Image (cartoon, rainbow, N blue to C red; front, side, top):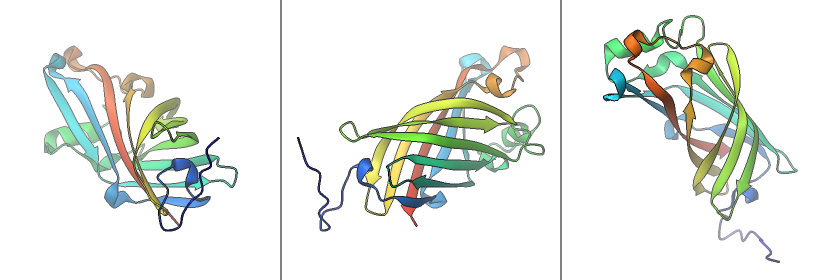
Length: 183
């Protein structure tokens, strides 16, 4: 049996050693990016959301829950016409649904693998679906943690069925980098 004692001079690199309490998303060091095949699979659309917020709580028993909120209108693909279309009712419908929310109901660390299994619910366009993925630990310090993950999402599950001439194929890949700091 191995004992894991924290040495104050040497910070832990284990998720399970993070302090209980409130953790706040650092939006300047976090990102949510999407990519999706279009033009019948010949082109990949890439975009990022520029306005994020979030907060989590680690309980005294090690349980974890939290929320990541994405402002839908903050989508940027570096193509103005595409950004306008993505914000329209054909896709994100930002007038009626200004935010997307992922609510994490559980995070289970696997310190040996340097990963965490994240489970929760994603709400997009007023529709909520279960979502789980594995996040990789990028950095861990006494007062900060950065996780990276990738998850495939079916836009049709959230009512985004626009697909002129069958141009859009497959699932949307969402890549997350989230840095949280202990408050």
